[in-house]
Image (tube, rainbow, N blue to C red; front, side, top):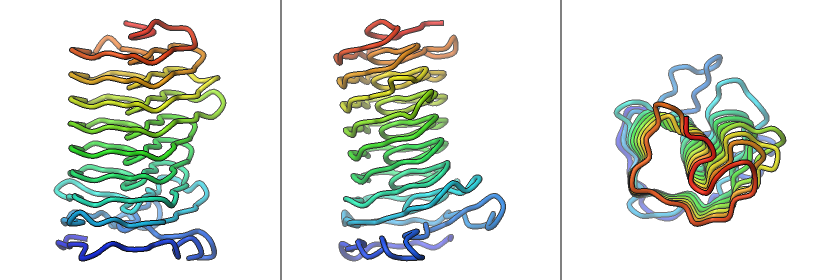
Length: 264
């Protein structure tokens, strides 16, 4: 978990769909609050620009278990220059195409598969407390609460990154965004283009569902459908939230204005 690794070639991981009785791949650093609390990756993984194709994880809800190629990247850990294409990641909470929970650094990486779960669901990272830069997600994302095309919940920093995938939220979902569902951190130079269908959801935005942090030089172009606190850029901008030099172009259906449904 503290070592330094490089990926020497592309990998066809389509066979993982039948692993572990159909549950698929077991994440690197498969952290679990109750089972394996020491499994935190704090080393360096450099994909050297290679792609892992068809990675499959199909797990039912497990309390505080992280799902993705990496379950938990801890402080000081780094994942860079790697791509995921096809496949799918399904879990309960802390679910991302690449990383379930990130306290480290992710750069120059992408995920293109489908991602689904219950809470803290992101196309690239489920919950980010570290730094994500120069990265993107393209697959479709679905879940119940804190759902984002790139990151479900952001408490760290997102720089020059984007999301292209569509988002489908479950009934009465909370905090759904084209890039980030719930933002407590910093987003800069980033964008989202995917459509959002959250017909019965609260805090729904083309870029961010609920903003309690800082958004700068960013934009959203996808259509947004929600029911309460719905905006083309941000669904709900809290009193601590700031938005600068950012815009939205997509159509909006729900209670809200084009830029932000509610500005506290």
